[in-house]
Length: 480
Ligand code: NAD
Ligand code: UDX
Image (cartoon, rainbow, N blue to C red):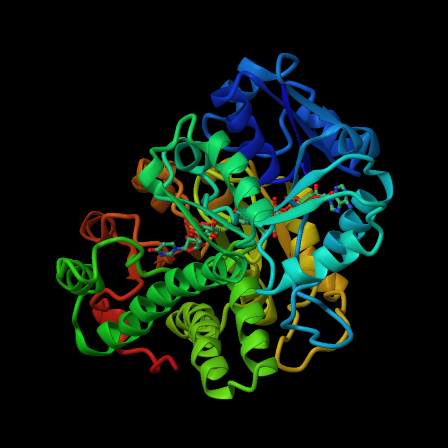
């Protein structure tokens, strides 16, 4: 029986390994983590992450060929294939702070593998890492090798949160990079054999190590670039009377462009896009390519602009001040169908509104109050001018309340901001909500989920990203 051990039981390690276990009953999969609470949750009925379909997959395999454990060393020792799926956040201090990937967790995992291994291992980079990381990992492993043959593969993960299980069941592609030596090719084939149990062969791409590592960063940069492109055009739509939905549809109909990832929004969030682009920017700078670095940096600058443009729109529409006004925020997660708030645009929007002394009342179906308070109590990391993180002032945090119901959150509010595209926000009883709000009642839709005409007919003053402006908003000061 092939034994797999995955180091890191997070958003990637957990779902990916659960699907491998489901599709490969003859393989034993153990997911290990240093976080005791995370592993306990994986072994309970309350999994540590919310992901549609995940419970079902875990229930089918847990205790049969899928296990979760904190005994990291034992399972690494026993494994034939070790996936490393630890977090690789942006460095917040030291060389490359604000841009470079922090490989501390990766390095410590590699050193532990070198310490405990007694047999040949295939070590798979599942985390997103800077191009050439495999070379550094190889050095750590082989300098301690005791005659063990390590083969390093790059097998980046392309799943998106909220659709992770569907993405893993039916991936557009599986990418495997390895050394072009006989041993390297053998290792690539061993991993290919795992995926080939459910992924059609023509969707399993094999490349050299550096292409696989770089493809992951490039794919995320391209996806984020589409969103910044459509968001940049959304600002022009508002200035001209064009409608971003019509423009994006017309542009996306070109088969060379395609329709996906052209939804204008308050900005992209999530743990990957910003981090991976910053990482790409840093690698370009280190390789003496400042023009390329600046090109990709602009994708993040437009994303920041979109978030502050939204805040400015809210404030300027409401007579240039939201001080003391209750603003209901619907949605805090970075996208629907996840409870993940990493880099969610809601953090920046809420902080912008708090900066203008608004009283914010937040409702999200999957995000806990603790998480929201934690997210809002840290200041944004300025990647151009890295400084130590400062906590937000306690007064600002007091201006935030969290409710478990959209009707409660909006009661007595002057305005609503929709910041996550949860399906339930389309179905709310907006007449009831309107009746319980201060007048004029404003609704700012940062995700283009509501029916504008219906809401206008109720009496709301409505703003939606990239849509022709209400006459009311046109008369207000221009937003830059
Ligand atoms: P995560 O923070 O949810 O999980 C990482 C886990 O690794 C944590 O539970 C942590 O405790 C554990 N860990 C860290 N060091 C460890 C060690 N030495 N030994 C054992 N466990 C250790 O992160 P994630 O979202 O799963 O992302 C993991 C990697 O996958 C990142 O590189 C990320 O860029 C990449 N990725 C993420 C996504 C996504 O949608 N989240 C998608 C594709 C790729
Ligand atoms: C992304 C990549 O899609 C995935 O391939 C990679 O493995 C990890 O990073 P994820 O961040 O989980 O996945 O979600 P994604 O669906 O890409 O959305 C990222 C952000 O962009 C979200 O905030 C989402 O709301 C936003 N978005 C997405 C838009 O604003 N407009 C769009 O058209 C699409």
